[in-house]
Amino acid sequence: MHDSDDAATQRYLELIRSVHDEWTSLEEQGDHSVQLSATALSTIKESVRADVRHGAQVQMPPTAAGPYTLSELALRTLVRRAVDSVPGVIALRTTVEHEPGENGLRTRGTPARIRCRISAPATSSDLLQLADDVRAAVTSACRDQVGLDSTVVDIHIEDIHEH
Image (tube, rainbow, N blue to C red):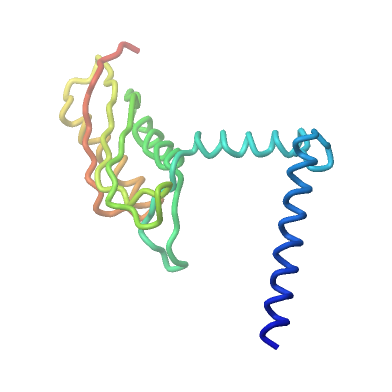
C-alpha cells in the first residue's frame, strides 16, 4: 500500500506542477482569463490605501467581551476630538508611545504615553490650567471610550492663536 500512496502523491504533485505551468504560460501570453479584472485590482489598491491611512492596529485593554484592537487613526481621532472639546484650544499633533506589541509588525502595544501639541487661545490667562483642562479631557475620553486608565498624557503648548 505504501508504493501506491507514493505513486498517487507523485501524480498529484505532477498535476499541480502542470496547472502552475499552464497558468504561468497563459499569464505571460496576456490571457484575460487569468488576469485580475479592473474591479478586483481597484478593490485591492483601495484596500491597501485604506490600510495605510488607518495605520497599524493598537492593542487596547481587554473588555468583558475579550481583547480588541483599534486603528491608529481611530485613536488619534479620539484624542483630537478630546483636545478640540476644550474651548478655544486647537489640536496640532498627537504622538503615541506604545508598550511592546504582541501580534506582529502591524500591531502596536497598548498606549503608554500620549503627547498632544496644541495651540492655545491668546486670550487664555492661565496656560497651566488650560494644559490641565486638555489633559483631563484626553484622559477622560481615553478612559471612558476605550478603557485606557493608566496612559500618561503630556500637553505641549506649541502655539498661541487669535480668534
